[in-house]
Amino acid sequence: IPSSNPSSIPSLVPSVAPQSTTPAPAPTPTTSTCTCNTEVNRMRTEIEMLKKMLEEVVNHISTPGPSASTPTPSIVCVDRTGAWLVENSSIMRSWCTWVKKKADLTANRCRKYKLADDCPVACGVCSP
Figure 1 (cartoon, rainbow, N blue to C red):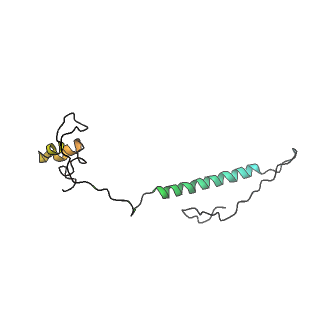
Figure 2 (tube, rainbow, N blue to C red):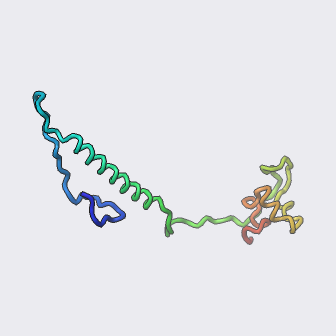
């Protein structure tokens, strides 16, 4: 029996014990007193209600919230040295040195060649 004032989180224990109204099958075909259709419809309604409750629980659990245990990622503030290839170029170069040669182009170069992880100081992601 659904509550007239349901909570958003289902209880772990049912408030009413389940009851079966399906009579035992008759040994021989006779005039049936089976309430199967009524029982099936009641079960469908109950299943739909349980699906909605489960959906609410899943939404509640999967909604991100602040967590004290989530560590803050740390960025190592040291530029990579030496020459290497990057994704958008076939040129082997010392990218951290090159990216900061023209200050007015540094931000664009860092984005275009995705250099922030390898050159955090040169790209201004953090201070040394």
